[in-house]
Image (cartoon, rainbow over all chains, first blue to last red; front, side, top):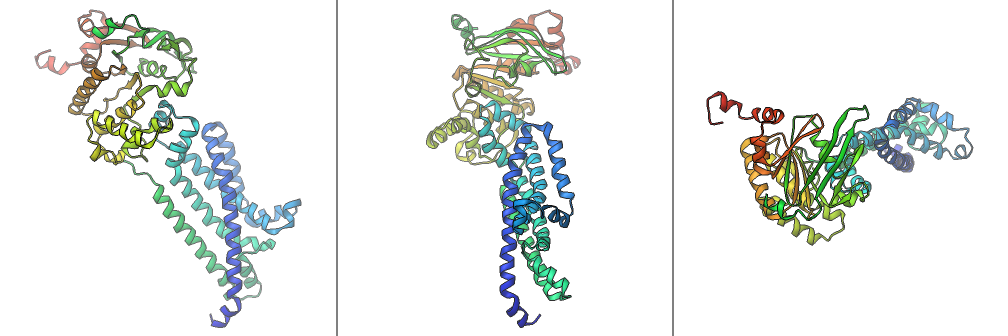
Length: 211
Length: 262
């Protein structure tokens, strides 16, 4: 790649990277906001766990291009491509976060939750002082899987005009210019690796030592 | 016993009144148990696994609700008590300890005070005081994590935690069952000294006859959810009731076989 290429596309790569981050970040916040409370609720109402996890599972099996296509004709959403992209990415992120929140809390040593109850901790106190801290590394692991997956899927969002690094990839494919394809793919891969490393670090911090 | 007879006028610390408990499948785990515990005494519940010991213990702090009958603590039905306040007023110790693995030892011990909103200084002072009382030097143990402790040390921390809010009642479910015999003996001695000093009412589930004889003022034997006996230790040993002799004979078999002292 020549210096001329970066002179020409450097600014655009930076803008599209920020756009990519915004799409993925917004989707992660939304998905966490939905999936963590839902996961907690499922530990209180375990008979709903199977059906709800199945729904999240099915969402994840929808091919991403089809998902963007389905959302396109919807009224408010269709107006702005970014809305479609964020909603679709949220749908993909739900399962890993939901599953890990549920499994993380259910996996806590029953003796610990039993004692938390018997010592007279209220439901809230049990959740915030015992269950969430002990499940934190699990929940973060789910968030990490979801983030890495969504950074990749977000490149497809360019197909519906939502922007992001996929823009360069699609343009590169159309004009048979591998430099453009790489200009989109390499930053996207680096974003995924950075998210993986960052969240992996947090995950290790929150891991509780066991005997 | 002295403490018991001196406090006859007071309401029983714990009273089980025709308590029954059936599982959802309809299996009767507790069959019409009536029993009364005098304040400041230790009562051991003996019985084989599945005899209903733990279920009976858990009905006191409403970890389970009896199908029928009533449990009274300090003369008041636990059904009418606020369950959170009831539980905070009753110490709870189990074999698995259930120490919070993400908290230090001192925070584990002070947790009940923490959730009651007491100040940090008071919590730490109380926590260190209790660690000393159960034989752990706060200077070297307060900041450790539970996974850095031996089984006996963990059990000591569990006991200190149960005592933090100065409960009048202590429920102990096979607290020393997982310990080696020497550590167990040390723990039993420590507990006995502590109880002599603090005057708590203790309900101790065990299947170790020796432990019951060592620690308890009364021994209760359950079998198949039914109360078979409720006796003082000396009476228990002297009893010729078949269920009791069968239970007693399950101990020290090796000694008898070797022509030993039993």
